[in-house]
Length: 278
Length: 217
Image (cartoon, rainbow over all chains, first blue to last red; front, side):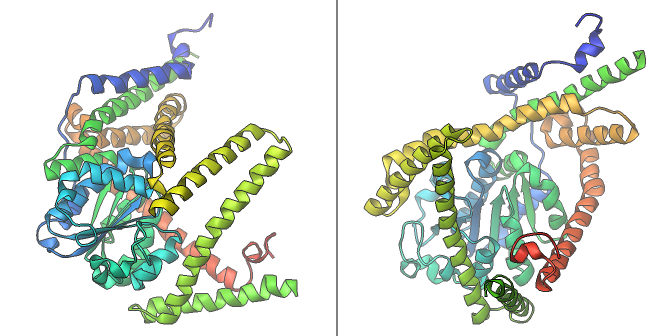
């Protein structure tokens, strides 16, 4: 290190220092919450309005697809939960399913997070959990034309013929709205096989990383609404008036985002000054 | 004979299925029993392939363990975890109808899989932070512009951006909708055209990898 000035040293900080700085920075808001207000953007507002008010009628059937696993709970689950609550409060009936192998864990979490809304709902009448499906885009396409062949029974092995809600759900023509929450591609399967082919109302509750892929479809009207990452979840929690996990996470998002920008500025100041000296 | 099975039969099946799906999508969007049946087969085959994948995975790790290949310990650990989860799930399935009605299966899922899944995802944040510091350098004008745009987009994604300066969300949105969306549109349209081209090449037998492996003809 001899002969190195402060700017040179700034260029070669040990990565473990960054890990500790980030760790401590993320801890502070958990110990002492900041609670900055969250502004709702238009794509999130469109999503919320699409599942509430005049846009949804009592008895309408909505499909909610768990396209995320446990690892993406922090990004997808809050928005998904708000939408399920909103749909239930409008009297809609919900068909839950998932293309992720740990879909049951996500379903259990949803039932726990929205327990007041599930409390007065009857399984099989107001909602049904069909469980995991394999088959990718072919299964989604088949679901549109003949849902019973993809799911001959629900997750709990009850034949769909014995489930009252499933008597009204055979394919795309019975569904008022589809909400897909994904870390991967399942939303785009619904986009091609449901929205594109049949004009079904479709919205996406995705991880932040997929935002750039999803925006063009939202702007083109393929998705009537779009929630992006934890921020989208926090905005939905603002809209329904019930702060939850995503609102809590916003403090950490604030701290980490600000820290990254400060780090980039600091690194570049060091880089530019050391280059000038050289 | 094997060449016919490998090439001509696959070629014919692919062609027939493609035509069926095309015709249904564009001319019978309500439902067409023939296409629907073929698609149902696809779902069944997909499910069978999951089982095949599981069997292949076990075989691979059993060989790795038996022959003491590099990192065989991980293979052995995998096999133990696989057997425990499988047995736990099967016990739950046969006694109560669902795999998660088994205490061992549930415990492993809730106390091993769930925390590990969340942790693995969260750890990427630390790498991103460290990488951002060491790699994002304004080495030239292009890199400087990208850095500035990136900073605005990052800050506009967090409520703190608006607290710092009310113009940050507007600038971030401008970068997102005016700067980034057209680029993504181009990517997606070009990707879709590429898929169509690939489909035609496969149908015409130009994609050898699609049929029997190996290089392009």
